[in-house]
Length: 289
Image (cartoon, rainbow, N blue to C red):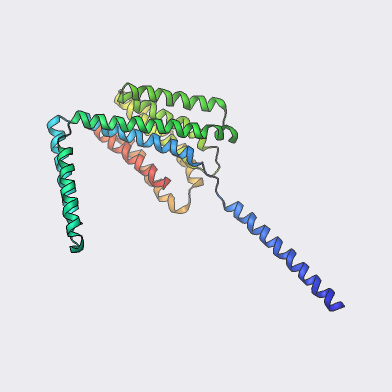
């Protein structure tokens, strides 16, 4: 009888101990789980990023003459042709490779005949489509932001910047697009701050500062541009507290690239400043990855 009672007690204690361990394990998992922004908000940020990159590409294209565009286009097609030839080394795929080569040749002819105006039209169409996706992503996220604690005022600020950006795109006003797009980065940052483990709020503010510093310098206001870049130190300090050890080196590269951009302000070269701005953006991307 005593043995039986002892066995029952052992079983009960085992069950209770197992339950406690499982509970602690679940609590551990909850502690380790990072609070990150939802995909819908990330899509808004990524969409703005892609849009501004597309605008840079359009601006570069607009500066080309028709002859320069055709020469560049031919060079790109020649490079693609060489890449395709290297892929056809396998004898088993020779027949298929010949057919693909023929098709690509026909496609190349079509692309070779595309004018600069046609290329610009296609690129603007992509921008329009991307902008529509940003609006959709924001609409999908907005309610969640309010539930998370964002004020209605913050939402209105971002929507105003997004609407101003949309008007600028409609007018094909490149300078205004770059200005309104970077301002949208700044107002969007507050929504990433709602998630305690997110770093993209401060990264967006740095991105805003880099773009605005470039715009201010274009307008001859280098002092304000330098001041804006100085203010990024506050954001990098906050980032340092949140970043994992393996990302600290990337943060150092970002800080140095901001300093390099400040030095570039002293020159009269907008091309140099643009290169330094783009390096800042690349370092931001490296930290996000």
